[in-house]
Length: 307
Image (cartoon, rainbow, N blue to C red; front, side, top):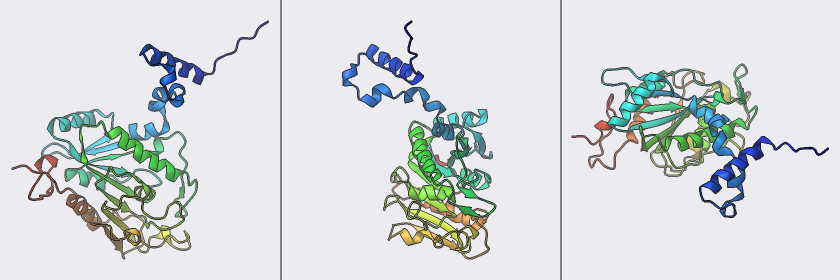
């Protein structure tokens, strides 16, 4: 008796994709092999990296006299506010990368929204497989070091998805990360961002996390405590220092080293949050506004260049 071979699911998907392309008038001979075999068009929505964007938290400026709107992308209030922004004018947007334990304190993001910035914070822990690379109880990092590559992919994927977002002012897109997220901000090579903020990271350490990969003309604000308990020689080898050591004359960049306390968190300091806001506002100089006006507190992007 003849046995019937069962076609693997991936082969069935690839076959369906090929038939679709043929129906559209494409010859298989003209297709790159990866285009005919890769079924990614059918699987992107459920992929781990897509989940980090789909389950992102958004923090948006409210309407006049209203507080920021906060929630996931599919929240009704968030969806309504995004539609309103699209009808008004795209907003300067901050992509925020949380630390190794996830997104917790939203107040710094609310402050950005109250000053006219939209904020999107991809959720790295939306991945089905996403182990910790840090041990909070020991204040150490470096476990599962491939997670650093996860975070870089999350940035590039979010940039890819935001490219079609009409509420984003793509000329005023910023990257902001803390701790593990700060490592990703330091090492991301793309040039889509107007400026970057690196908080709670030193840019020192092992070769796979050391230094800066941002374009040399992109301004950076780096903030860290000199007594950060995560970066003592006892906790981590050769991670003391600050990102300013890698600026090499980078224009418009600032390295802010705090000499008070021994906390890892720098965003709990109101003066630090003010410095971050001032830095981002300074990067909002509009080439369309001859007088180089900046956003003022409480203004949104529509105020820039207005009479």
